[in-house]
Amino acid sequence: MKKIIVQKYGGSSLSTINKIKKVAQKIVNRFKEGEQVVVVVSAMGKETDRLLSLAHQISSSPDKREIDMLISTGEQVSIALLAMAIQQLGTEAISFTARHAGILTDEVHTKARLIEINSKKIEKALNSEKIVIVAGFQGINNHDEITTLGRGGSDLTAVALAIQLKTDLCEIYTDVDGVYTADPNLVTKAQRISEISYDEMSEMSVLGAQVMHHRAIDLARRFNLPILVKSTFRPVKGTIITKEVSMLENVIVRGVSYQKNVAKITLQGIKKNVDIACYLFEELAKKEIVIDTIVQDFYNQDTVTISFIVTEDDFITSLNIAKEVAGKIGVKEIHTNCKLAKVSIIGDGIAKEAGIASRMFRALSRAGIQMETINTSRIRISCLINQSDVEKAVNVIHDEFLLSQIEKE
Ligand code: ADP
Ligand code: ASP
Ligand code: MG
Image 1 (cartoon, rainbow, N blue to C red):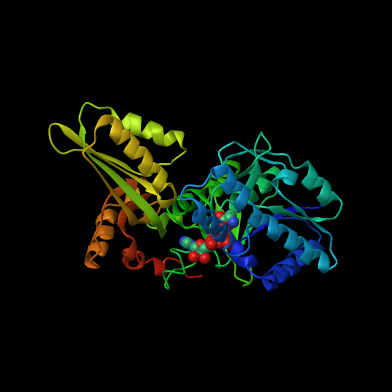
Image 2 (image 1 turned 120 degrees about the horizontal axis):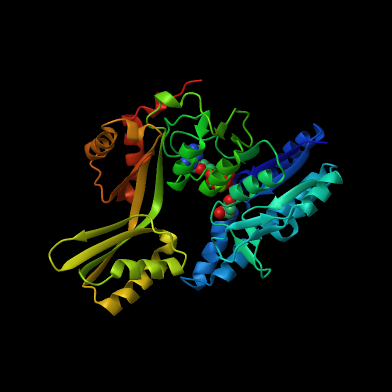
């Protein structure tokens, strides 16, 4: 039996017809080596952003079913064009949307979760010597409605298909040479990491390293599927994301991540007896809003202040809910700041070593960067700062922990 390989090409690798043709040639070369090839693709270039901006020109909070209907079209364009480009090279290829590929999800529009993949149609096409091109990021729910998996979700499609088709690796092709100690487009001294553990990668992704979607990492970890992240066009080794990483012992901080679009909502002057925390967060949960950090403070005997952090995408909905709840229970003031960013350090060694947090805070303070909320876990420390300070912050923290010297191959 032939070996099946699953590859994923991101939007930046498919942003022009010329690049699509080059990717097609790469895929055909691989197919000719004798493997069965399944390719997952994202929308061309920044197409998903363009589609979303069209929607936001019509409404500030467009209907989520219609958003999915709209943004799933980006991937449909790229699967068809890539299939044509492969056919043009004399090799058979067929494009599949999520419906064809049997990718079933729950019903939550724009943040759907995978339920199962019925890959019969894919396997049939592979067995008839076709290269199969699958639209990433999209799914179909029980009511036959189109859903999407959340921004960057085609990584998740690729990992799920690799697991379903029992491959021993999932190959992710992108515009950088692998996973770096920080975003290489922001930190010139960032270094490529040759191997990274699922735990560290998941945390780096959750905290903003968009090179891989964190849900893709979490799924791969559950099935122990290694992921290779590599450049589409440059012949560089890339990064392996896996369970065991040989040189982990000596590394305290593995990388720095940042998220630019973070918003904070603060409700002040809430009467102490009111059970606002339950009430507010129940209402937010009903709208599938994921809260990042929650801080509750008692400033004096009678009143409480609650702050919580959400992504910019969820800001308007969250603020409307906060206002509604505030109206019902009597809140003195609501403050918002949607020009915030979160900068984080990640590393398996953080909890084992004293003084890591103070080094991070000192580096920020030396650079004149003010911190808002601070948040820590076993393998990370995060600080909220002003969006305009992000680039400086990531660079000074990267320097402080000498991340450019961690790995020299
Ligand atoms: P694709 O279109 O291939 O899915 P993405 O734009 O989603 O690509 O992810 C690649 C981008 O992730 C890079 O261009 C880079 O700017 C960004 N990035 C952020 N943090 C990191 C990191 N630690 N390592 C590598 N890339 C990173
Ligand atoms: N095209 C989608 C997005 O931009 C999915 C992806 O790129 O993985 O979010
Ligand atoms: Mg991506």
